[in-house]
Image 1 (spheres, rainbow, N blue to C red):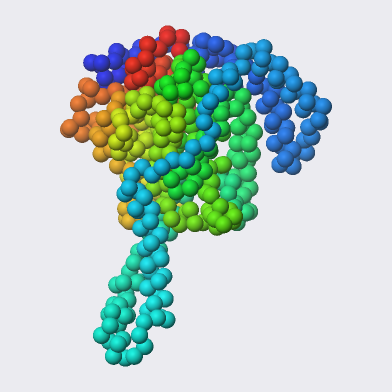
Image 2 (cartoon, rainbow, N blue to C red):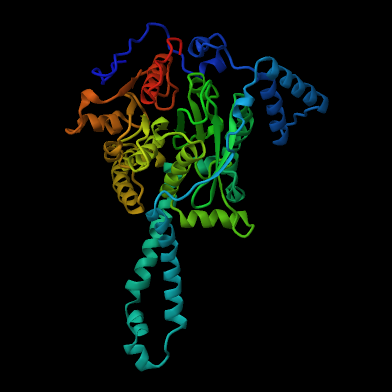
Length: 499
């Protein structure tokens, strides 16, 4: 990998051996995982996963039964194996499992009140003009009621249509920009899905239930975090080896169609075994991350939450809540908080780091874009199956650009990147099929005349035509440099050669 930051970080020589991603241990037990982690495969997972999978499949009507004696025998065996392999459960004592976040700023709290207040104003004005006010002709002509009645188009219909248009378009676009709440939904709206959609998402949701115990068997601790607007986020915490609770902590921000249950369980183990605490979470609406009930009604709470908080604002509140939990509840210093964002998660993390005032945060933007609007416009023909060079695609791109701007869906990562004061680095792929290189954050910064290229920290990922370069895990040499940057950011000792 040819590092752009040649002045500060030495170039990383790529070895001639075949690079196997971190997903390889699950498929090939003889992979290089032992070399990467220097500890062999983590203990206590095979029998527990098999048993949990049987239970989940049985719950989904797959015709598999789990005998009670088999369950008791396997659980007893797992307990003995955990003791014999030195289970680290004792190191997790004292980790807070519940946290309620505060508002990032007074402006966020005011806007949270203004948005629904606009709708209430429209309803009250319509009711007043139709059923209230003075009834005499003279009073109607010269009173405030008469003035409002004569100009109701400006005072009622324009605010109503604009609010309706913006909210509805924003919601529809959110289904394409962040489809995870639609795919991995466990909320009350699921029963209103059409049958074909329920069938299409049944398999990934079943996999999530099966794979979650794997993360727990690797040391994951379930955390519940309540956002300022009342959403209960589902997060998972991994304690780093020989690392204090207030030690260096990495927070991962998922891509648009990811869920923590589907993450490779070896991913957090790499950070854990290199002395980092690791936190990952599901955005609102994804899996167990749900809105609070309204007067005991889960559906009403879900709809009320969607109405009062736009999706793009919700992503910022989710990100803020995780960082506040790490800093306030775990007491981690801002200089030891690393925001690791992948794809749209990189844009969310960059925006948070740019506007964070408590202290400089470390930022890693991995395979992310310069502008959300440009990427969404580029991908819009794919949603309807139009050929990119057809007149329909050109027309659709113009409409998509206008709707995205009108609905407020934009992440300007270039501007936000310049505002980040802490340690930061970029990871990019030159053959990314989701975010073309020309639309990537790295390309935009390289083209900017104000950027000092020799001072940028860059990890150029290997272009492997045989895999999905946007979503693949880092190869071993890439992870080596990735961890080196993380260690450098936290002023830790040099990463060991074995990684």
